[in-house]
Image (cartoon, rainbow, N blue to C red; front, side, top):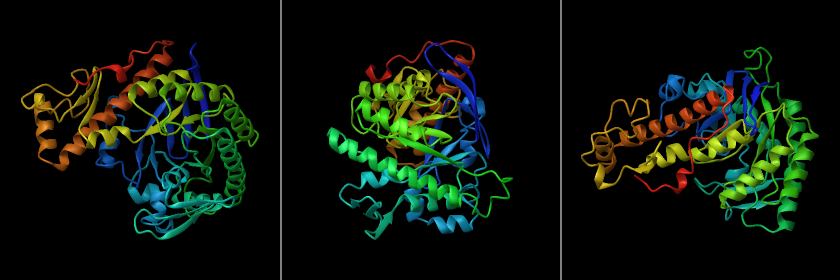
Length: 384
């Protein structure tokens, strides 16, 4: 894996290119989330074309926890890895499963060895250790995989957060040890010309800057190819999220990709990209789309409202996506009100296009030396 930082703005935003085994990713980049090897309601053919001048999504995520439970990582391994399984030839990233296990607060038990949990599907008992998370992710075969970590709840005391951060670091060391010993033991290793997956560390430390600093410094000592900032967007105020990102970026290497996990609204991903974040992901574009919430240059639009029943305009007149080019607000409202599955498809495609186009614009402005956000605070605007 190679990160080529081509330009850095006065505000810290980085325009670059990340070379992975399945292709080159232009950064900063937004990564759609494909939880169960599927970006919900959006087929791969559309993912390859949506937004950003028809270039589509450069890289997507798959979820280790969900694929482990169903259909099982060994099945995916036998199918040639997650790329072949889902017919996606572009880069992919898998998370560690740590956040999903964290969300099962009533169904899990944490120890120094790992996490025992019950499946949300059938209640069956399972155990995830750092080694097992690596085993599953190696079997899945995504270009980038994450160390196993613990995400602390919010709010959490300093003592609880420090203990959790220490556990995450111990698990990161065990993750790296297992990864190095087993990274070449996959059927497709030779197919990729001997290129292995890349393992990223995850900075934790809750909302305490000194713990974030300690976590970052200990991970950097491990000399990993990339670093993520985890444990954010778990209920803390947005200004706290921004502060933790800004402070953590100070302690991460400038020649490695920096990834903020699980954020956010369009105005947030733009802000974080201009701060120097290279990679971001969020389920929001497709989740909001399935609930009738659409993102536009003028703010958020609730397509469920009666006022759109006879509106012949596009969702966003400034958007060039395939949905805005063809369909009216009236039709999209009709689909949603009728419970038509096509509503989820079209709404999700538009929202993904909006996110991807936002990052395309930011990349262009960073490349040109421009450093001024045009988004404003959309969160403060009323819905159309």
